[in-house]
Length: 306
Image (cartoon, rainbow, N blue to C red; front, side):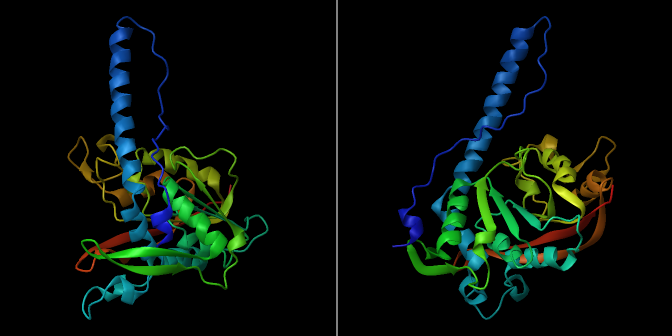
């Protein structure tokens, strides 16, 4: 029996709702009714998203994505081989490759949207403290189990109800005690997190309800001289992000195309310098014959000195 089959997945609802200022005017009853209906709609969308990321199916898929070998991911001699190199490890390697030493740069890293933790553990190769935060309670529970035991048994779906039991293993050479994990909302992060020498947000921004809230917080999270790595396939979907808050994937009022990368440059350019960017393919296996092949855009930023 795998560890996941014994885990009771929580049924939680998203409580992070930002309300505007109180408006006092004639017709306030109609306004209040409108706000109530709008908030209920957003709340239900968030609840649906939570349920999606709390399923055993997703947890198994992400454990395979984070810790599976290329042979465990794809059992064919053909296919997108360059996408099989471990994506979470590669994300951490981008952080480590661009990190700078300095007395004013904290030896702390933040992996926001850490999923089941592979990048967080890899970041301990350099950083003395690594904080992993994810919205999914089941993902965070898996991270905690990996931190304590170093391994988790999970099931890879092959066909229908047919599965293969595999084992996720954290590299024994890594100091797992340097990590800590917590459930949290990237759009409403705790104010007492402090500053970090490195912040990683892998495939996160196009799954947030209000991504600008996250981007606006980054200046206070990344210490001057610190590195910020954002990867995203820019797959804007209304079930995760209302169209009114998309960073790209639409035309503005003048008919000009708006792309996610340009919005990142516009939003971050005041406080961050774009160091480099590149494409990073990855593969998420669903079944033996069905896989998600995706190309994320990786952008590396340096926090400007004050």
